[in-house]
Image (cartoon, rainbow, N blue to C red):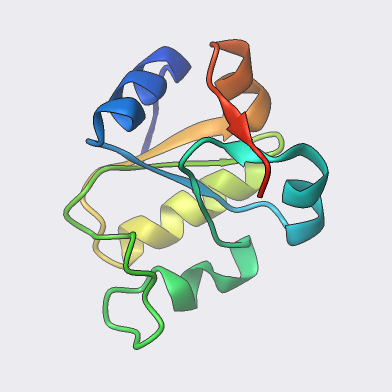
Length: 111
């Protein structure tokens, strides 16, 4: 797990070479929206919905595709990124908070 520059995350997400993962709670996403195209899985469900061995794996996630995780400030995204690495994801980044995305010009969509 390593940090990623927000501008790099934006470019890679737009190109389809990076999956964005929002690990904030449902109410947070409802209040502020999410990064355009991001997959939303609250932190408490990451080990179920992102585990490649689990039957409930979200089909938008793959351990072979780079993932950039974000939350509100960066703490929960760090925990989620660690969990993804432990589950076998090979390229995982901590984008930090949603404000890093928006501050670099990343688009937001209502969930």
